[in-house]
Length: 296
Length: 119
Image: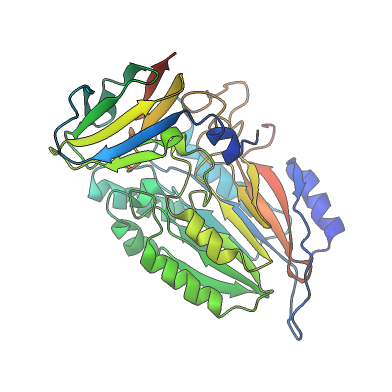
């Protein structure tokens, strides 16, 4: 186990900013066993992308794998929150990209990796290729007292979770204690961050409504290619940086065009994050890391 | 930067809007035909006057695109070859984005346009 002092030391070594999420008041369930742990969130690697927004696209994911492997303390597990690959119309090419992505991700020393789909992976075939290569697109698992729920808001090209998945979510939540520590993983924001840029989930408000009765819920997602923090009531939503190119702040300009690649600072705006879960306090401390040292 | 939903919606400009089927247009409405194909709308800039009633007749050519004007809270699913009509009557001036909100491939993120409402 890692204590906070060591965690902060690790964060400093990574060169990233540290964000401390809010504390939630709660009463610990009688007899609940909690243990602090770390996990890493990577997102939006868009394997197969080619373009001026990242002339080093063939190497960025590999750099990220190396950076995660170089962490002083390995995480308990890793999550990839979607857009593993860049979209293609060709089903065979889609599978080839996913296979290449898997091969690169297999270089991670930590072997427990949970994958989610993004719209680039799943929206053109309703998630068929993703499920073939990575398994179910929505699922839940438990780790050291925290209940993780992966939601699929991309297999429907219209960005809907859909009634069937919402029913599944409702049933899954019904099995949790009221004060359960719940982490939701998803690709698109569950709230209307910027609908004019397609940064929303059409029925995301229904999922948030199902989660709202639970006092200890935190959401980690991708899609928007930048660090972003938002609250819907007591539920915190944290977007991660991408591993391909950064996008502008929501609503900051008319078009959501990628930020230009800076030759003087390769990989600027890219990165991954480490999350320290302190389940007993229902607290998540986030540290942002660069893909390669010397960028910001 | 943080931008709340209120921030986006606070300037909601239009009062009257609705999706029509294929019923004939009301007599005095201007009909504006729009084509949607990967990865653009034609035209991608639509100009009208504040208070003017218009009927957008949107036809997807090649894919099941979407047509969404979030600031108006109006959207439609497009079926290739089948025109969909969207009735609008803006009551405030401004520039408002419309976009495809059904993921349609590699240029989906660029498939958008601007509704310009003149004062």
